[in-house]
Image (cartoon, rainbow, N blue to C red; front, top):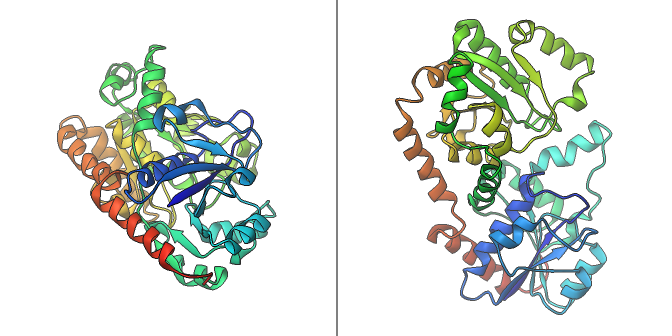
Length: 378
């Protein structure tokens, strides 16, 4: 079996712009381990015909080809990180190739928000594929995705590797910046001992926004001022003049006490290594995120509301800012003493999402073999 996975190259691209580009590489790494897979290649739906240099270091030898060049070289197409031409997909289907749409973003938000908020959205024809693959976080979307795409919808494993993060950690270390909770201890003590909290929500959708984390931090400050020394809210410069954002920010004690800073976009390793030693996050029906795993890998306190990670980090339910604040205080008071147990719980998560684990390889093998055994489009 020869498999092509779509990616999207563009000018000035960084592997840290979103998790989707990394996800495509991790999936390719898993496919390469399957004995019946002859080759895995990347099909470029973008303009540059090149990917960030980290890709070659993490997954050496992955070929990047155009749609035209892939025509005679693939048996299965996984449309994932770049939208492919529907006419080409129709041609490939007519030639017996199987087409999978692997949806890693939050599908309901992707369907509804562009129209509601007058933003660009997908214009791909829904019935272009033989199957849709969803991650476990999106299992509630199976029925309506089946109706929309007119084909079977299946859940596939969420996979992650620290390979890209480790490469970034090594890169910043060469510039004297060190990633990890232990390395941040001296800076934390110099700031008065309180946690310097970072909020990394992208703020481009309601599913991952900074409003609840800001309230969590402020409530923790109100409960115990010494527990929080700073709040860094990233990915907010595009909202800094919006009246609603200003209303929320100016209502917070941390802002009034000049403990809050609002930033643009930064990668986790570079920012945490210089400015923060804890992360507060929030999601809405989007509980599997690479950012959480990057934070846990550094042993930083992760205060989160992801049911998927309920046994790792510091979990608070739903939109409960008060519970989140109490978890932030628990981290401030006891993270150092509990670090070994915290690390062990994180490692259990890493093992479960390893692209090369037997369970994940078996699940993807089963899906690919079933796909190959099917005749025609569903």
